[in-house]
Amino acid sequence: MKGKVPKHRWVDRRKIVIFSIILIFLAASVIIFLSNKSIESSSKIIYVAANGSGDFNCDGIDDQVEINKALVYVAGNPQYKTVYLRGPGRYVISDSIFIGNNTVLEGDPAAVIKLKDNASWKAEKPLITQMNLTGNHDITIKGFEINGNHNKNSDIGRGKGYYNLMYFTTSENIQVHDMYMHDSHGDGLKVSKGSNIRFYNNRVYKLGHDGLYVITSSDVEAWNNKITCRTNSGLRIYNTNHVRFHNNVISSEGEGGAGIEVQKFNGSNAMDDIEICNNLLNMTNACGIWITGYGTQCKKYSAKDVYIHHNKFYKTGTNQNFDWGGGIVLNGFQSTLIENNFFDGCYGSAIAHKEVTDEFSAPGSGYTTVVKNNIIVNTQPSRKAGKGSAIFNELNSTHSFILINNFLSNNTGGNYLYAGSTSDIKVYSGFAEQVSKNDSLKKDFPWNEALSSGPQKPYQIEGLTRLNHVSANLIKILPLV
Image (spheres, one colour):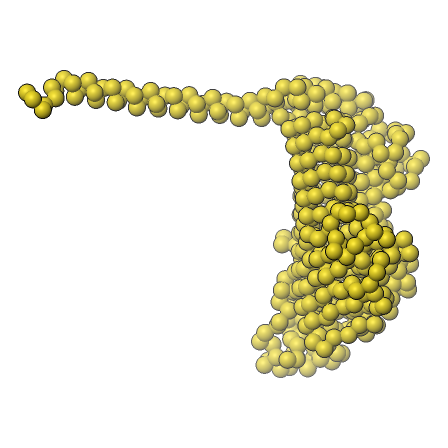
């Protein structure tokens, strides 16, 4: 018997092992079940309705009362996360809606929050804002429509801080997406002293100021928005850093300012990490992109390195009375890089160094802008903005261009005004016909990246069809080497 284990003891041990495995499996199952239940409970929804089917029900009068009750309930009960506006339904508000931490305000596309007629609110009082005056975090607003009711609140002017659709201060982790915002006196989303702001998949039509306006903040991204400007810009940042604007379509219907606006005024806040790419700027009232650093305390080392690439500019700067028409107008930023963009039919100039007014004067001198591998064609004159030159350096005593390998053709006012290049390719009238008859010149086109610029999905707006037509023609007009 020595050295041998009795058979019954092996059986007992096997039973213990099997039993232990079963216990571990059951414990794991319980943990997973409870975890899933916790996830489910944390995403519970409170419904607001206009037809009596909600947890809170509105009647079309002072509907912010019921919506705010729902938001307060979610803020006080962590097992809930979302207040959902059921549609179809119009929710008319006579006071602000207040949203708290870790909250989603969501709705059906047919759910509409509308400002009441003749609201008579004071300036800077928004339709939707934070619950805590010192700031909130992790806020998502998505899926529904906001009607600023511009025409029934005509007692005040646009762009003066009245009736901003959404306004948050000292708040972080804000997402606004898949919204339809229209007809207001103020901004779509305004954020001051915030961080981690995401603005995407929105349709913004004729607001009274900017579609997105971010002030003294950081970590901002806006993409896949379709914006029609009316009073100011589509996307705007002011003393804000770590920004990426991409894949947006921004246009106007004869109103508004620049499509995208980048402002640096005095202060120690750096603006040295800003990227603008793959956007379509289409028939904006002023220039497609306006960049300005100004004020006596604005330093070159803190306003620099903006990267603008793979954008399409079509007939930007349509207002003949604006001297800041064109594709890109800039001053007061050092080492801006503009490359692989496609400019077609811009008014005044495609790219210009200019001060829009004396207010936007940049201190000092020695500012450089690199313009490389762009296609610039069909630039046309503007009564105030210029004679239609591709590159215009109105600030040639303080600013300079470095021009490298750009494709230039049919620019009414000439290719350069107070600028020059030894490496750009200049294509003159009649060259297209010449190249079209010579197959050896059609093999390669060095500006393919510029040809493929713009949003990464098709948009049905006037300019894009024309741009695609121009792109097809340019492929036939390969440059002389």
